[in-house]
Amino acid sequence: MKELIIDKNESEQRLDRFLKKYLKEAPNSFIYKMIRKKNIKLNGKRAQIDTILAKGDTVQLYLSDETIEKFRGEDEIIKSTFKPKIVYEDNNIILMNKPVGILSHSEKKNSYDNMVDSMINYLYLKGEYNPKLEKTFVPAICNRLDRNTSGIIIGAKNSQTLRLINEALRNNYIDRYYKTIVIGEIKEEKIIEGYLTKDGELNKVEVSKKEDEDSKEISTRIKPLITKSEYSLLEIQLLTGRTHQIRAHLAYIGHPIIGDFKYGNRQINEYFKKKFGLKNQILHGYKVIFNGLDKPLNYLNQREFTSSPENTYVNIERKLFRN
Image 1 (spheres, rainbow, N blue to C red):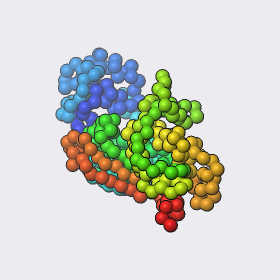
Image 2 (image 1 turned 30 degrees about the horizontal axis):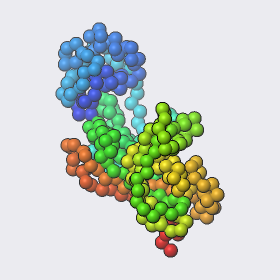
Image 3 (image 1 turned 60 degrees about the vertical axis):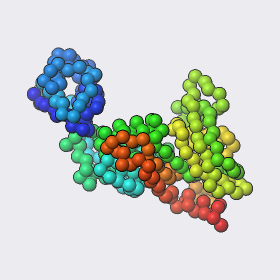
Image 4 (image 1 turned 90 degrees about the vertical axis):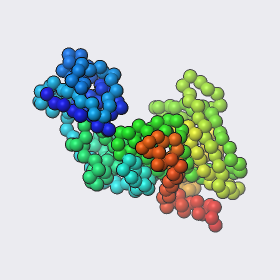
């Protein structure tokens, strides 16, 4: 018999979900059968699959060591050649400045140069995370950015932080701001709304004024920072967070982002590619303001964090607006 003591990183989740992560190689049918046959107990008693675990609970596995070892699988040590640029870090969260060209998550197995795996590797090398000492928890990021969008990524070092940050994001308590440069003049701050439909095969979205069966409502705040006759430097606040929302929404109102070959103006994009070497959309998630966080993360409320974009962005902004 093996006994597992639930700590803060395993608490506040259903028993069956905990077991699926702990015995990650086991079929779901095996886990449910072992609970039903009382080969897996909670606090020495018959367990219910949907019981929410609390810190200090004990899970008893009346299984052989060989069975447990087989279904546990191997604890993989993440190896990433990409080192994250840290914006802010404490015992609970880590804010990283994601560069252009780096994925938020890995697209394929054994591809570690992404924000999640680089963060895990960074924490492992610091001695703050060791998969051999954890039952199920793995540090994770709370928000995603497109491969060719740069900006702040929020990482969680423990399960409580992950839950609280994700809940705050779902409730729109955490304000996220972007800077971008678009074609044309935008002179007034405004909120634009619409409906977004995703085409998974083309990895593209379409914005419209009318709702349909597959669409989702979107809302984007636009604030002009500098406007000249041909271009506008904007601050964008995401009021909803959908795939490609900023890029598609700005293109829909006739002000596509420069460098955006999927939704933008190809002729102008080719000009910036030739003149500045720009190969992607100018879009940088430069600011995060935390709000609505419960204890123990309430110390972050009203705190603002910013990050700087890459040199290509800076050079283009300076050339268009600072001369």
